[in-house]
Length: 314
Ligand SMILES: [Fe+2]
Image 1 (cartoon, protein in one colour):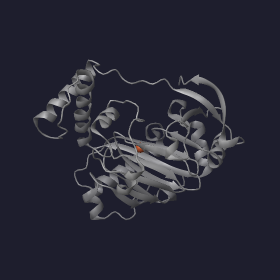
Image 2: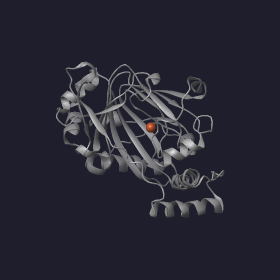
Image 3: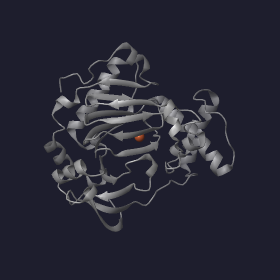
């Protein structure tokens, strides 16, 4: 893998990398691992437990009600792509860099270029997932724990990124994200869009945004192929400690802690207590039972047919 992946990295990108919003060009498209044939093979060979398909809302207003999980195990890779291209589906192949040597190499190359451009940068817990999704599909307003970098390979996406402040995501909601509660509760209002950074992400572009930044995504009018990269920098672990501990204190003990400072004695005490809480399982992990309610079918409306609801056991 000799080509440089980042195309136009500047000093400004280096300066803003850790806490900023960054749009940059890349060469993933030229690597030849995203042809229909290569994607079909990946869909068929990626482990079942790391492969997901969902049907999603076409409008934010539809909320999470039309968000359902399905089964793609009996459908060929070629048919899955055809169904996504003409339907309303979202396919995710998770942790490609953990199980696929080609993507492991890609992860190493991306991180080494990032480190080359940002002196002292430390990155851990990197996950690369492939997203193949239908025209016009919509990912509702939410926030994630890791940093995100969204690499567009085919098709376009409109990415709305909102500030990390009480107005856009309350501290209680953010604690909920860290505690692994469902994300549906994060409130979205159309008026928020006035303060959003809106990126029309084109093939050959990658966008990153500040950690925990609420975002929502609307696909363009053709099949979209992207790589979602999630990763942590050391500061993220401290944020984890602070929001996790505050969340438990508020929910289990009714004590709202005001400070979300990521430094000082309080932060270290929280780092210690979050480990303690986890060790002693003070907060029961929110393990939701997942159900499969459709299977992928390129010849049906939306690219799927409903099946009798069954528990996802893999
Ligand atoms: Fe996200």
